Length: 288
Image (tube, rainbow, N blue to C red; front, side):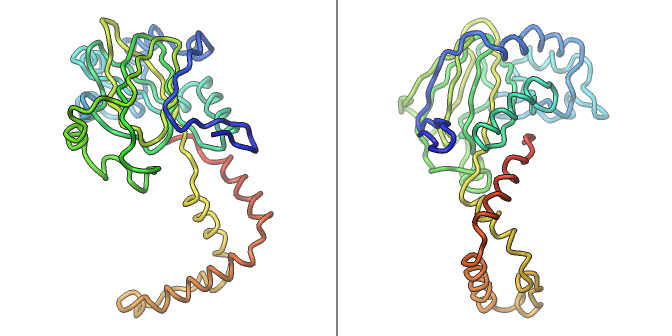
């Protein structure tokens, strides 16, 4: 789906491209990450250790805000995945990449690395409320993909797991062949639109390392909130609701507020609002 203004193409279906060896492969390697693990250089606040969808409680590997020596390696060897979150806050290279993605698409972007031991999976059956771009760095990972059961999920609406559970998803999809069965090798990149159900796992005798770039797409709901936020400059919108309103019927106030919104939106300076909201979008923080 090409954007007429930016030329950015947003595929509606999963798509794999072979990027070859690029800067992301040079700047972030399995050897580099293994070295950070073994020298206890990882910041504890950025580390999660999931296995089959269950996230290990932090007190198993964190004490007084720091990683307990040897624990990350211990749990990796026991089959847990290392999820190193918000790489854009840790490494200048990923900060530049995420900001470039934001400039090109308009969407805030954060990056997470996943190191999964051979023959295991970190996450169970689920879907994401944002589109992700997955860059396979090392090893091989299989991605069985099923079409979305919900339309255009967001973190606030139809998000997983508030909508359903991994167990319910597995039961629903039991016996159903995946709509796509994708195997990623080093140098491959997968575009995965939000809502697609996945349960990836490592293939072969080597660990799998990939980086996920999450594009937090801005929606018309976000735009509506931006418009409403700009209407609080109108005095009637800043008036307090009375105790009688909140403890009795709100019907009158809902109707009055609807009319205030209708009037304010009708008189909105669209050009000024456009410039202001575009500036806000480009300045949104990258961190999830």
